[in-house]
Each structure stands twice: as C-alpha cells, then as structure tokens.
Length: 360
Image (cartoon, rainbow, N blue to C red; front, side):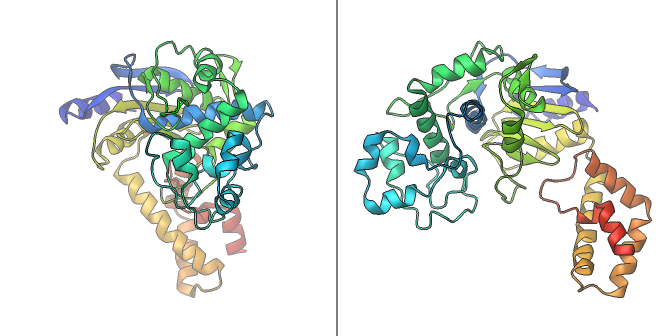
C-alpha cells in the first residue's frame, strides 16, 4: 500500500477531495484532509436507509416481499385508479430496494412526492430490469415511517447514529415532511466509514449488534444485476466486496477478503476514473499487471464457455490446458481469492472444479 502516493496524486492533480481514510482489518491506518467536517454524501444516503430497513426487517415489522402499498398511508389506496392500484400491488419492498422497477423517473417532482410517485405509469410492473430511481428510496422511507408510526429521521438518530457515535449530521425531507432517504444527507468522512465498518463486521459496531448478519449478507450481495456488476439493497457490488456510492465521487469501498475499507468524500462533477484508478493502484495494488490479468481472464473465460458448451475446438482445449498449467492461472486465481477481480467479470475458468471436469 502506498497511501502517500495516493495523497500526492490528489494534491498534485488538484482533485477536489475533502478527505480520505483507509482501514485495515477494521482499524484506521491512514487518513488525509478533512475527515471530521460535514459534506454532502448524496446517494450514499440510501445505504443509511438500507440499514434502517434492515433493523425493521430484523424485528419482523416488515416483509420485503409484500407490496409497497401495504405500507403506505391507507387513504392513498382509495385515491388510486383500479389500474394503478393493480400495478403497485405487484411492486414489493424488495423490488424498490434493488432498483428493479421499470419506468420510474429519476426523481419525484411537485409539492406532493407521494402523489407524484404513485401516479407514475409502470407499463410492466413485473419487469425486473435495473432502473436507478430516487423514487424507490423515497417510497421505502415513506413505508418505514408508516410502519414506525413516528418520524424515521428520529428513529435513525436513535437506532443508527447513536450506536455508531455519530453526533454531527444533517438530513433532508420531502415537501410532505417525510425523511428523504435518497439524498440530502451530510456526514463526515469518518462517520461514513462507520457504515463501511458496520457492514464489514456483519452488522456489529464496537461490539454492539445493530443489524443481523442475515440482512447484511442480503444487502451486500448481488440481488439485481446491472452493467456495474450488481446491486444489493441500496448498496453497489464492487470487485469481491461492495461499495457505498454518492453522486460526485462520494465513496466507501469495502473489500472483506482483503480486509480493507477505503472512504473518501469529494466533489468532482465528471465521469473520469482518475481518482478511482489512483486509489486502486496505490491502496489496493491494482496496476497494469493486474489489469492485464483481468483481460486475460476475460479471454480465457470466452474459450472456457465455448469448450464447456460443446462448441469449442481442439485448439481451444489446448489453449486452456496450457493456461491451467501456467503461472498465470495461479496468479489469476490469487487475484480472485483476494477479491480484486471486477464485479462483472465472469470467472468460471478459475474454478478448480472446472479444471477437473475439463481435463478429466
């Protein structure tokens, strides 16, 4: 790990990074910049909402597979047309948590976001493609408020922020006054890291269990596939671990196999990957050799799939046999064991069972 070089890249390139932290085996080992001041975390707010959802799930107060309508204010049912009611009855809490509801716009508008959301026309409510929408998080927030019968923001302060020892924070509300779980929150780098630690430790922080291990496993596993490699419950898949993501490069990367957590808050309004690539190179050790290995694995995987499907040639089999007996395969296998492969990269070719079945 070369944290100093990571900091040098940030300062020399004048990347607008407020602060960053690195944890190894659950302990803070490196920090730079403003790690205690409040900054916008944008969509990283959704992970806070996911933790609140998990607490109510653990208490048996919500069923993730029941319709969102069952958890919304009763009078809203009566105001829906028969067609709209039939549509929303097919949308479960799980579907909203995994961003798998088609046709929802990115955000709600107007003075009543609940009315706006329920008026959205979902042509095929059973279609489960990935569709990132703040409305999904907003509706989960409304549902949790109704289940509690009290303010969700106050619940988060008492049941999440207090045990995480988070004393300085800000959050927003919808026009109707609901806690807004999609964005609008401000936390420090250090306090966002605590959510990474909570999930890294299976729902425990400083010896206090806040979430069940069952919920953490579900929330951080791929529940809905997308082009980035997968999505859990308001948590993104990242390599062999997962990440908490905000709009303008607010990040908390958690790699359980490597025992590393990296958090940074920034405000960089572009699509560049420079900051990420510097972090991966200097903190995770992913450089040109590793990226070349990722390409090699992808190429070998294509051949592997051809051979195992019965469409491969004798030359394909020879290429695989040579790969399996090479040092390259061992290096690629080690990268997978360390959880450093890209989340969307298929890796059947690295399976030891796959080798046995192919060569026997």
